[in-house]
Image 1 (cartoon, helix red, strand yellow):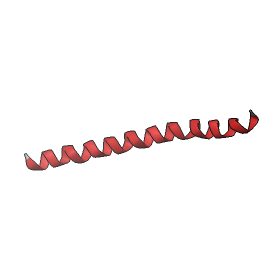
Image 2 (tube, helix red, strand yellow; image 1 turned 60 degrees about the vertical axis):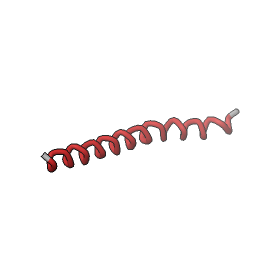
Image 3 (spheres, helix red, strand yellow; image 1 turned 30 degrees about the horizontal axis):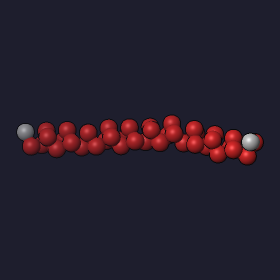
Image 4 (cartoon, one colour; image 1 turned 90 degrees about the vertical axis):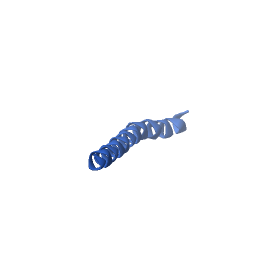
Length: 41
């Protein structure tokens, strides 16, 4: 039971890490576009 619980926690952290990576991956192009658009104005 203890082993299963630790496994669950590890997979939980991995999912959080993947979610954070995906979020930053999607946010990066947006911030990059904004930086490139500013000089035009």
